[in-house]
Length: 336
Image 1 (tube, rainbow, N blue to C red):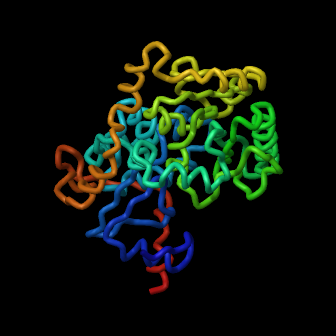
Image 2: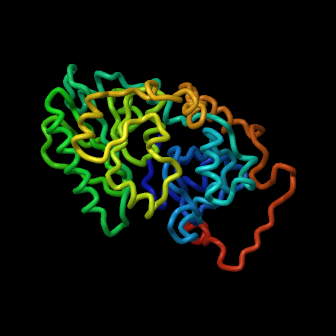
Image 3: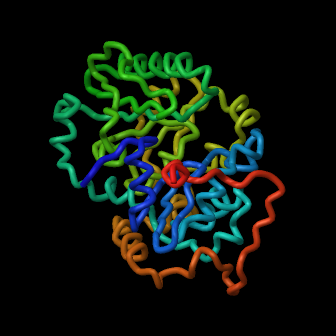
């Protein structure tokens, strides 16, 4: 295996020459799938918050995601809700329909059937065998100019959770990638998730997940362990970003203050103890059985698995009408 860094000439060359491409977000705006390549997009979560055109943001902000969905030969479709909340907001639900493949998320396989022994994961973070584990994984807030204040606020809450829970608990802090830094202060019974760790592996040893509006809750839901959504800013967040789901619709505890949060963690109410749990699994994660990666790989390796991405479901070809500039060429190609 060869590892290349994003944005380097080696990365550009790999994009051009690789026969199989897999991405859980987007390739750069200049990327065009060449003839013969196969591109699988697995996306990175089931959204609770608004996406694409439903966000309070300029339409141009969704352009590259829209392009990537149209470039893909295969797009995993986790459920009807997922298609509505992830594909529809980018205005490609009809054009991308031939590429959609119903199946679970390969990353969730690692949570259901973790390839790393639990003892190894606990030792990696210094978690004692008798400590219960909390994962604090808040989503992104703010903008590119507010990274440090956002992290500082979340790090302060992480430290307070660990302090109030006491030494019987160990708190892991997974900051959103937009605000992730290397130091969150000295917390004796806590640690930052390492950048090179697979969060889905780590979730296999977690007893309680604490999040807010993040899609991570749907990755954790299949193992039926307690989830607490801490949402003191829900009114502001709903207005600024928008939500498809309210916490009350989900099989999770919801808290608005620190006292309630600590109590909910200690209570440890499993999703299956909430009314309608089975119906919610069917709505959001019906395909998660621990074999999603196996099915996705089989489809990627089989060119007959889906119709060509250049054709609609009825065989008609697409026509692009572009009143403005078309995407720039790949940096590798433009050097001639």
